[in-house]
Image (cartoon, rainbow, N blue to C red; front, side, top):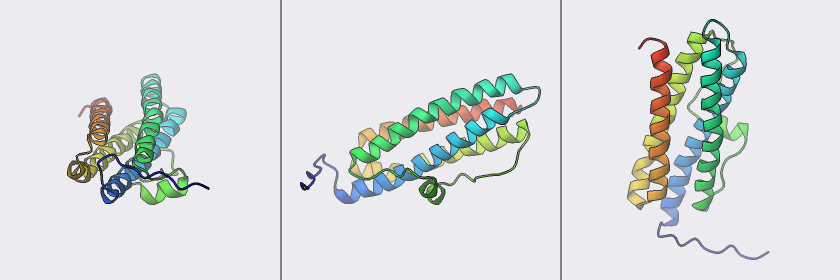
Length: 160
Protein backbone atom coordinates (compact mmCIF):
# COMPACT_ATOMS: atom_id res chain seq x y z
CA UNK A 1 0.00 0.00 0.00
CA UNK A 2 1.38 3.39 -0.92
CA UNK A 3 1.74 6.18 1.57
CA UNK A 4 -0.93 8.89 1.16
CA UNK A 5 0.25 12.19 -0.24
CA UNK A 6 0.47 14.98 2.29
CA UNK A 7 -2.15 17.72 2.11
CA UNK A 8 -0.62 21.12 1.37
CA UNK A 9 -3.50 23.59 0.98
CA UNK A 10 -2.12 26.30 3.25
CA UNK A 11 -3.98 25.12 6.37
CA UNK A 12 -2.03 23.34 9.10
CA UNK A 13 -2.96 19.82 10.15
CA UNK A 14 -4.03 21.08 13.57
CA UNK A 15 -6.34 23.67 12.01
CA UNK A 16 -7.71 21.17 9.51
CA UNK A 17 -8.44 18.76 12.38
CA UNK A 18 -10.25 21.45 14.38
CA UNK A 19 -12.34 22.51 11.40
CA UNK A 20 -13.14 18.90 10.47
CA UNK A 21 -14.26 18.22 14.05
CA UNK A 22 -16.63 21.20 13.93
CA UNK A 23 -17.92 20.23 10.50
CA UNK A 24 -18.49 16.69 11.77
CA UNK A 25 -20.84 18.12 14.41
CA UNK A 26 -22.56 20.15 11.71
CA UNK A 27 -22.90 17.00 9.61
CA UNK A 28 -24.40 15.11 12.56
CA UNK A 29 -26.87 17.90 13.31
CA UNK A 30 -27.81 18.20 9.64
CA UNK A 31 -28.33 14.46 9.19
CA UNK A 32 -30.35 14.21 12.40
CA UNK A 33 -32.51 17.15 11.29
CA UNK A 34 -32.89 15.50 7.87
CA UNK A 35 -34.15 12.31 9.51
CA UNK A 36 -36.53 14.19 11.81
CA UNK A 37 -37.90 16.29 8.95
CA UNK A 38 -38.40 13.24 6.75
CA UNK A 39 -40.19 11.45 9.59
CA UNK A 40 -42.51 14.42 10.07
CA UNK A 41 -43.16 14.55 6.31
CA UNK A 42 -44.42 10.98 6.48
CA UNK A 43 -46.42 11.35 9.69
CA UNK A 44 -47.91 14.84 9.73
CA UNK A 45 -51.71 15.02 10.00
CA UNK A 46 -54.33 17.69 10.46
CA UNK A 47 -55.66 20.75 8.66
CA UNK A 48 -52.17 21.95 7.64
CA UNK A 49 -51.28 18.55 6.18
CA UNK A 50 -50.70 19.59 2.57
CA UNK A 51 -48.73 22.73 3.43
CA UNK A 52 -46.52 20.94 5.96
CA UNK A 53 -46.11 17.78 3.91
CA UNK A 54 -44.75 19.83 0.99
CA UNK A 55 -42.65 22.17 3.15
CA UNK A 56 -41.07 19.27 5.03
CA UNK A 57 -40.29 17.54 1.72
CA UNK A 58 -38.56 20.65 0.38
CA UNK A 59 -36.53 20.95 3.58
CA UNK A 60 -35.45 17.31 3.83
CA UNK A 61 -34.46 17.26 0.14
CA UNK A 62 -32.27 20.31 0.70
CA UNK A 63 -30.73 18.68 3.78
CA UNK A 64 -29.98 15.51 1.79
CA UNK A 65 -27.85 17.59 -0.58
CA UNK A 66 -26.28 19.55 2.27
CA UNK A 67 -24.96 16.53 4.15
CA UNK A 68 -23.03 15.52 1.05
CA UNK A 69 -21.43 18.97 0.74
CA UNK A 70 -20.46 19.00 4.40
CA UNK A 71 -19.01 15.48 4.28
CA UNK A 72 -17.05 16.29 1.13
CA UNK A 73 -15.55 19.38 2.79
CA UNK A 74 -14.43 17.23 5.74
CA UNK A 75 -12.80 14.84 3.28
CA UNK A 76 -11.12 17.70 1.39
CA UNK A 77 -9.55 18.70 4.71
CA UNK A 78 -8.08 15.19 4.95
CA UNK A 79 -10.32 13.71 7.62
CA UNK A 80 -12.92 10.93 7.58
CA UNK A 81 -16.53 12.05 7.61
CA UNK A 82 -18.73 10.38 10.22
CA UNK A 83 -21.37 8.22 8.59
CA UNK A 84 -23.23 6.10 11.13
CA UNK A 85 -26.22 6.63 13.38
CA UNK A 86 -23.97 5.86 16.35
CA UNK A 87 -21.50 8.56 15.32
CA UNK A 88 -24.26 11.07 14.64
CA UNK A 89 -25.96 10.34 17.97
CA UNK A 90 -22.67 11.02 19.78
CA UNK A 91 -22.05 14.29 17.89
CA UNK A 92 -25.48 15.90 17.46
CA UNK A 93 -27.17 18.45 19.68
CA UNK A 94 -30.59 17.67 18.19
CA UNK A 95 -32.59 15.31 20.40
CA UNK A 96 -34.00 12.12 19.01
CA UNK A 97 -37.60 11.42 19.86
CA UNK A 98 -39.84 8.41 19.74
CA UNK A 99 -43.24 9.99 20.22
CA UNK A 100 -45.79 11.13 17.65
CA UNK A 101 -46.24 14.89 18.09
CA UNK A 102 -49.07 16.84 16.56
CA UNK A 103 -48.38 19.19 13.64
CA UNK A 104 -47.84 22.27 15.80
CA UNK A 105 -45.32 20.45 18.00
CA UNK A 106 -43.56 19.15 14.88
CA UNK A 107 -43.15 22.73 13.73
CA UNK A 108 -41.80 23.81 17.15
CA UNK A 109 -39.29 20.97 17.20
CA UNK A 110 -38.16 21.69 13.65
CA UNK A 111 -37.65 25.38 14.50
CA UNK A 112 -35.48 24.27 17.42
CA UNK A 113 -33.58 21.88 15.13
CA UNK A 114 -33.01 24.51 12.45
CA UNK A 115 -31.72 26.94 15.08
CA UNK A 116 -29.45 24.26 16.55
CA UNK A 117 -27.82 23.77 13.15
CA UNK A 118 -27.28 27.54 12.90
CA UNK A 119 -25.60 27.64 16.32
CA UNK A 120 -23.40 24.66 15.45
CA UNK A 121 -22.34 26.29 12.16
CA UNK A 122 -21.62 29.55 13.96
CA UNK A 123 -19.48 27.73 16.55
CA UNK A 124 -17.08 26.49 13.83
CA UNK A 125 -16.26 30.01 12.61
CA UNK A 126 -13.41 30.77 15.08
CA UNK A 127 -11.40 27.76 13.82
CA UNK A 128 -12.26 28.60 10.20
CA UNK A 129 -11.29 32.26 10.58
CA UNK A 130 -8.03 31.41 12.36
CA UNK A 131 -7.05 29.17 9.43
CA UNK A 132 -8.28 31.61 6.74
CA UNK A 133 -10.35 28.72 5.38
CA UNK A 134 -12.64 30.59 3.01
CA UNK A 135 -14.25 27.49 1.44
CA UNK A 136 -15.40 26.28 4.86
CA UNK A 137 -16.51 29.82 5.78
CA UNK A 138 -18.57 29.96 2.58
CA UNK A 139 -20.17 26.59 3.35
CA UNK A 140 -21.00 27.66 6.91
CA UNK A 141 -22.45 30.98 5.76
CA UNK A 142 -24.69 29.26 3.22
CA UNK A 143 -25.86 26.72 5.79
CA UNK A 144 -26.66 29.44 8.32
CA UNK A 145 -28.65 31.46 5.76
CA UNK A 146 -30.73 28.44 4.77
CA UNK A 147 -31.44 27.30 8.32
CA UNK A 148 -32.25 30.80 9.58
CA UNK A 149 -34.72 31.18 6.70
CA UNK A 150 -36.25 27.75 7.36
CA UNK A 151 -36.66 28.57 11.06
CA UNK A 152 -38.37 31.86 10.15
CA UNK A 153 -40.72 30.15 7.69
CA UNK A 154 -41.65 27.42 10.16
CA UNK A 155 -42.06 29.90 13.02
CA UNK A 156 -44.37 32.06 10.90
CA UNK A 157 -46.77 29.10 10.63
CA UNK A 158 -47.19 29.42 14.40
CA UNK A 159 -48.02 33.12 14.10
CA UNK A 160 -44.71 34.22 15.66
